[in-house]
Length: 326
Image (cartoon, rainbow, N blue to C red):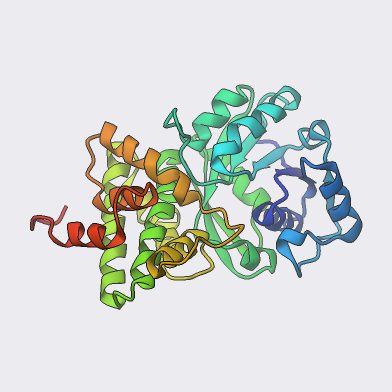
């Protein structure tokens, strides 16, 4: 595999800015792309992104709103919300060199198509090589160089290994995999289950209920993963269980914070994008099409869609028929 010396990050939000810092610490030449020219100029001049306040940009990071310049990098990290990924990659596609790895850094499933992130990249930029980055992490921790382990998956093992070496450092530890679908399902489903965990905490149902929710939620995740061809070891690893446990146990998770507010009967946190809210309905559609039962995720989707109250959802889950462990 060729050496990857340059990295572009498409999306100058908190997570994109944190990943730009990751690439810089790994010794890469880094371009951070912001669609808005004024936003790009502000970050370039101040070396601070207001969306990640208190963390100065590494000197190796250049900030631009020129998509053609960003597309010239040897690795591209697509750090946009899942439902905007197709448009962002489509904007990038005419400028990409054939064979350029484009790594999805969002967790979700596209509405309408039921496509996972690597499938969206393959359709929007056919000359690229799709990959996926997922795992238990928060932007602020990563930006500050706190120890973090994630999973990076590509269908070609040599490429996946090469990408890990290009982005890894002493504090950011990617583990490579070829189980792309397993990594994608783990990342997408855990966002929905984190909302459920927030509801449990917000309703003060206790630690035992949270533990039960986490284990039953992981069982749902694993069932869907198996139905979609994911490997069990991937779902039990960094991209699945670790991500779920982190997101279900801390208010730093935007999905958990949304669930917490719902459980307390409060308005959703302002300005917080919870990917799980967008993923829940399409996750249920995907599960139904694969004949997979996901009662916790289905309850979350119904609550978010105002088709079910939280109390009714809890009662429905607690009165389900007793059955054997799956």
